[in-house]
Amino acid sequence: MELAELLLQHGATVEHANKKGLTAFLEAADAGNLPMLKMLHAQHADVHKLSSNGDGALELAKWARDADDIAEWLKGTGVKPQVHDEHDEHDDEDKPHEYD
Image (tube, rainbow, N blue to C red; front, side):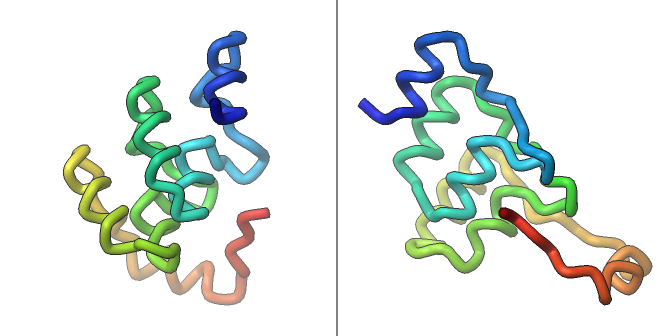
C-alpha cells in the first residue's frame, strides 16, 4: 500500500495543497507517476486543479517520464491544456516558476 493511500484511509484530504498550490494530484503529474494519478483520480481528486503559477497536470507532466502516456490518460479524464494569456506570460517572464 502506498503512503498516500494509507493517509487517505486515515482521513487526509485529497485536495490539500502546499504553499505553491500543488495538490497530491499535481505532484504526481510533476513526478510522472501514472499509477498514483489513477489512484488519486479514483479518490475523486480534482483533475482540473491549477498550481499557484496557473499550471495544470498536463503542464506539470510535460517533461516527466512517460509524458505521452500520462498526457493521453489525463486528456481521457477531461483535462485540457491551460491557455496562458500573452499578457500574463510577458508579466511572468522574469519570474521563475518554482515547484519545491
